[in-house]
Length: 272
Image 1: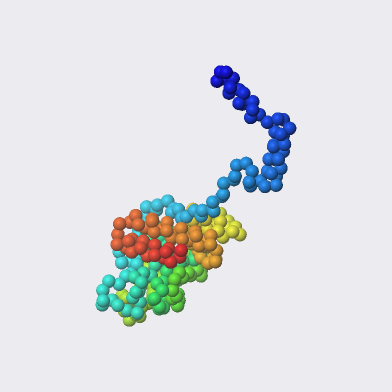
Image 2: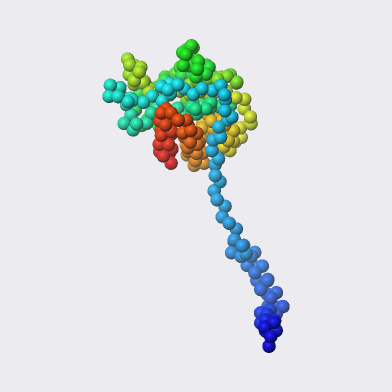
């Protein structure tokens, strides 16, 4: 017997009679109807939706970051000890871009900052018209100046009057440690520009926050993530935004940037 004829004989032994083959097909079809997940190729499990993070707007060539000492204030000497000295070594921190210009599409934006947990005190929030250059020259008094009671963690404040679209503003948060010694106060500043809205808001804050973050609208996206603290999706997006901001700020080679990056990453750890 040749190898070819033997192969054909073995092949014929494996062919099922038509009735049995039809029954098998019908049986598999019935199983597929009753238990679709167990028959045929299993559908791959869908991973949870990943919330995209913050994408900065195109660089503004006219933007200038705060001068050293104009942003994060830290204590470096024993002579500077006061009731505001943070044992956690975390500064009072504006939760906003500082090495590129932040944006808001709301005429009454919400500003957010972080207060170290062991630093009580009176807190001032101020808004100035103009750029950081104007602010550092101290050419104008604040447009808005309000006193708040500080509390640990992330605080927010919504601007109570309409700002102008297309205009640039600086905001400053100051934790008053000693009213007689302003040099001991903790403070931080940031600049933002008011841009025209690009899309109407929907009834879904997660979707709106994502779209704003991806469009470079930092202030509005962060405010939405803080609007519903119990939402895991908004919390996830907020953590992603803060992580992204830390990565962006780390590109600046300065002591001020290093302090901000370290603080942002520790805030992220606390949020997780």
